[in-house]
Image (cartoon, rainbow, N blue to C red):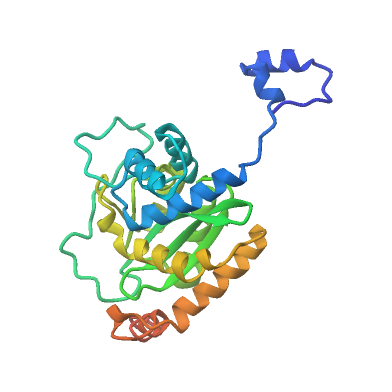
Length: 276
């Protein structure tokens, strides 16, 4: 926004853009090693105790040694994009452009591929820093259809993942997500509506409504991410790609009677009509 080579002064540019001058001079600071270590541990505790809020996480961390305050835990949780899971007594007012859709999967029998897809975002720790991962999962087969990494919590990398999955496998009948702003955004919901996909969203605080994606995150982190110390985003990309191949093609799933997601997905695809 601010052009330092422009003939207008930075002060005047800030006035025209209605920005504080401090914004133009701000230099982002890297996250400290101490904060990164705490973020990784908070992520591990969040997987174990998804109902734990900032106060409980603070107390759990204090049992392990670090003298940490609730406000610091809140700041780190916000940076990681995670919140405690609990049934909230009220829902807040939302922007009219961010419509919340009903949950369509309750008492729905899902037995065939491409009937229901689900998506979510999770935090991926690295040796120095972190990234976010969005994945598209076929509900019936547990197969990961597409995924994307990004260093910011924006909508575009989620849209890219969905677009890739639709291009490669065709659209599903129903697409389920949580109520995160990336999924309620007009850009995301319009993409689904363009392909005549029914939109389903979890109830507020109901992580079990998207439980299969939560199980994917747990498997990915304990079987791959926490065993590594990715140096760069490229390293994370390579490591996660390797794991996704293992997850889809090799790793047997108890819920699938020991079969792999690839086998269940490919063997149960409905026959496509052929042209006469």
